[in-house]
Length: 174
Image (cartoon, rainbow, N blue to C red):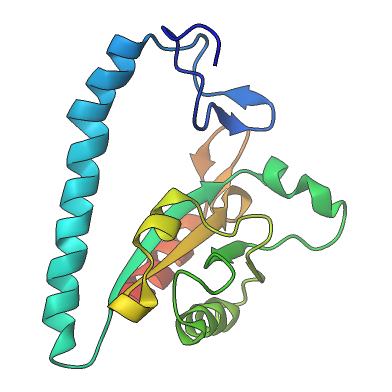
């Protein structure tokens, strides 16, 4: 990796043309962030999933983790002028949750007039890959929401689509 005092591994980009930070982090800063943020977050997430799994077992239900993401329109530029999805579901190509869960969520959004893609361009990242274990009673699905359906991407101001999505998300969660 070259200079060991810099963090060069992992994801360093927000998008194809935007770095997360202006300069690499030194290892002291990386370790501090791991200790104060990353590890406690993942410990809490795993504990919550394990509790949910145990609570659901009596009714024959799995724990379901939804990993929500906001997707910039630029991430869909590969589609050219083709209709772009409003929502992209990522289930690691069937590895992180049951096909039934993916189908249910896809139909749910389509019934609300949204275009839904599955696993393209996002098949799910670290969260769904790490925690999605359907055979162990823990399902994980990433949901990418195209920003243009709820905000003006240039000004970052919400528009009328935000209220519609908020209602849909609440209904899905229920």
